[in-house]
Image 1 (cartoon, helix red, strand yellow):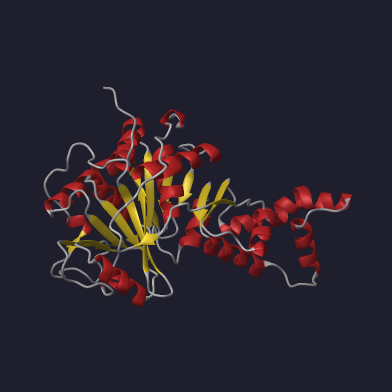
Image 2: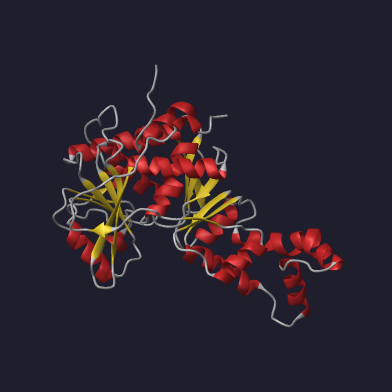
Amino acid sequence: MRHTAPTTLPEQLLVQTRQRGGEIALRHKRLGIWQARRWRELADETARLAGALAAAGFGAGDALVLLTQPRPEALLLSLAAQWLGGVAVPLDPDLPDAALQALLQQLSPHYLFVEDEAQWRRVASDGQRLAIYGDARGLNGIAGWTAYTALGGGPAPAEPQARPTQPAFAFYRVQADSAIERQAISHAELLQEGLRLVSAEGLTQHEEALAARAFAAGGQARYLLAPWLLAGFRLNFPESTATRDQDRHELGPTLVASTRETWGRLADQVQQRLPLPGSLRRWLVDAALAPPRSWHGRLWHGIAGHWLVRRPLRDVLGLTRTRVPLLVGEPLTEPAARLLAQLGVAVRGWPDPAQWQSATDPAVHVTGWQAPDFGALPQPG
């Protein structure tokens, strides 16, 4: 059978399913154990979820609001909403209550997913046609709410209903003056930007990527989710934000896409582990990190400095195998960038080019788009 080139995220999911359906696509650590799912399983679950959403009345142009830390359920629900021609609206679960309430009042979501009881207590529990929770602890038997595992309904459309120029994700932020702004990113733009990253960084299906932050920003969709669907590598979710550093250390990802805050936090962890200033050990560490200025400095900085200083510090951060360290959004502070570079972590910045607009403007304008050259995609092997 001849398949046309994919132009939406759900179509790209089907491409990966055809090419490597039996390979591991996603892993999530739960109760200390990594749980694996294959591409074929993801496609089947996405179709099931799309059927459940459709049975609840979800259709083209509708929005699914998600209030959660990164977890597979949120990702697959997003793809299911997009399968039906709808848009996924991830909200940052770390938003202050006032900002979150302002956004929820603006959105008045009919379709809503929350991660657990803590997030459920922050949202209004009425007015939804379908309200879903992921973690059942403390939420069993809540009237009007459905467990993710209990979702069911009729069959989903056999083919994805999304169109390339339709928004796949919409992101919202609250300004200091309480104004709410919206950023919508189309399927076409996500695939185009994702393909640009895949090509520039030489990403293949052999990468291990860690999704350690909530998907509530456009950069995560552009430079992590879209490349995952395009290159077919493994996407890994930590057990929680509290365990993400330990999980990163255990996983040893080759691809890390993080924000200024995350990279800055990792640089701070390195600083905290350095010996006291003025000590002999600190002098040796500084000599291993700083560019050498003499022959004996080059000797120490080279092999000895790598194995005794730089590699152990990278290992502490879980970055020993990282070859693609990406910065999404705002640039690093100069001290953090310098320290990470001294460790051999050359963080590359990828900006968020989308434009924010007033959330009261219903129009979604997709301009300047050209069809991605999918012939440049890496071939399975």
